[in-house]
Figure (spheres, rainbow over the protein chains, first blue to last red):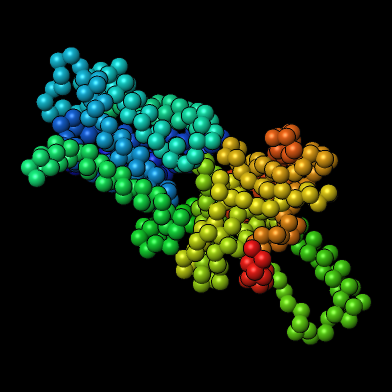
Length: 168
Length: 273
């Protein structure tokens, strides 16, 4: 128990540093802003109580907001992602259900499962984030392009990290 | 009562979700003044040390370029000074004059945090209330428009960048004097859009765009950029794309301009609105 808390704290700090020091500085024509920190929400254990999941999402978003100077934006998008996660898990559940006490990782459930699972949550998160940032429906399709491009890059980085974790 | 309790236990996730989203939206809605809040300042204080270190290194690497710019500016100012001295002499103006009042005061500052990849971009500069910086002062970089101060703490200020969807500026074509409204469309940090110029006005690619001074924030005649493209839009008006003179990607030394007669102008205008 203590061990896994420590492990997730470490993942949390690493992802946070990655996001704040590296990905927040990626400036590619204003269309690509990868938000890899959302991976923390993806990696939490399957059986985590929903209230804890929501609370952790809230704290994650709040910290990212502090570092990028955008109050409430990341918080609300991340809380939404945390809220839909149980439904996504139910939607993509494998035929024999989940193994008790397992993490939603590529090692256990395979590449394709992880891809759909991560893609759905990242899409929800990015969609709400980018539309909240613009806060208007003018330029609807341009914002959608930003969502899709950024989702693509976020997914690439998430899969890379996940492959690296599997490799070890 | 029992039904209510049942309802609450069954939907407790939804309720927690709604409460947390409520807090988030509250932050989002009141966020415009967040730079004044102590909490954020405290947390930002932690990251500021690092930002200033990075910035010092960066400014050292750019010293050569900065020196050249300063030299050029010096020459320009000396030339102006020559003209002024002659004018003053001819008008007997250089007497110790207490009626003459300066309208604009300049002070320089350094940008220590900047963003260009969001839709609402801000930058932070290293002067604050203590150095006399106030909200609504103009920020220019190498004589072209950079932004407007929106929040001050004791030793730092945050300015809204020109490349921010909420930024509006009254600007005109220098050669003809027709003015319109300048804003950023959220696409490329190098371009902005000038609208409300009627179609009978002759516009050429390469025309200089400057501020009008109507807003009492920017002085008159500060350069914004040059016309890079124009098209007819919405019947009567042009939509003019402007290539900005300020390079927001390497914004570093800026001037803050205080309009000493701003209150006077605003109060007077208020009477007629």
